[in-house]
Image (tube, rainbow, N blue to C red; front, side, top):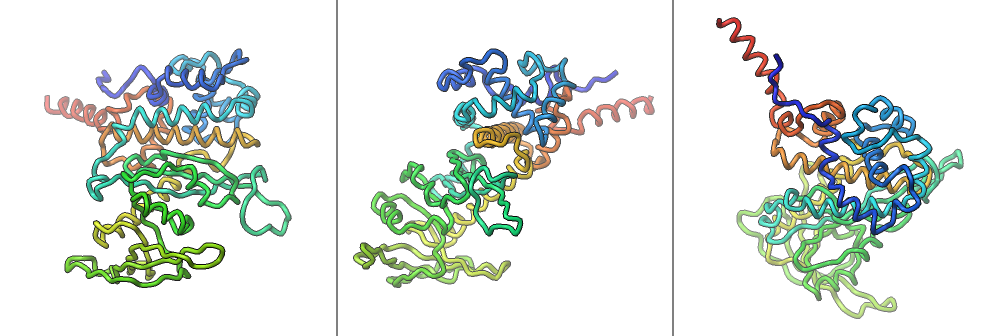
Length: 401
């Protein structure tokens, strides 16, 4: 007899969907009136359908509807009345505003903040880190303007730029904005509410001396890279600590020129840390307005920026963002928001089980393989071999007898 405790009365997909409170979805529905004039395909059904598309890594709406047709007896756990039709999902992606999915994501982020938050990042540097960056997702059609050279064929694919602000401990964006790929990264800085209790980390593409002056005046700490052709005046060199990393070549204060009407009329004092990367044989120049941390810590703060690159890679590899299920901007943004929601649910699950053996990519793959199996997810992930160990123990007892 099978005595395994790893089985559940709800599918793996259903268990993950249960992390989304229906009352939260209803609040978003009420705010944006997303179910107004809708008789059959509600926002909840739309959300579940798009999350299924993301989780199963489907590449077309036909795959989504065919997948649901084979699960007709299991739809009750997902609060779906009937398998959605391809045209129904397509129409909803075009007409229902992406804003309702945006609100669902942010509400979930607020709800699971205690699970996602990790005090180690704050303790390491005294303040929470906030990383700013963007990634471009290329589209199959010229729906949004793209950057780069025009191909010989004359046809050019579109691109959507996803601007993100993340906290490293969350591993999820706390602010997201979508633009066409030609929009400059620095425009996203206008959407961020900068505060003095965060350290902001960003690439040199966001360099803006006047904004840096604003940061200095309001005591908003930041770390970024200095452009290779930047002009500056050396003001003071700081002595390196005896135990500092040997890769730290220089720690000094510099003054950057600020111009008005093309003329230099004042200076911007900042700290400059020069770091030699032996592995890549590259010299990095970091600038910051933080003076109470060591040069080593300034370097580590900037290195944490790579976490957002990992998140971009994670989203593109583990979510269905290589193929889009609609040919309009609203449909594309809905799909990206649903990918972010699914990524958030997996991150919450990863934190809940507290099992370091599960890398995110492995976790996403296992969930995809067992999407509609009736496995108790937390028990299975904490000890996936438990069931087999129980069977082996029972068989050994037979031989012992």
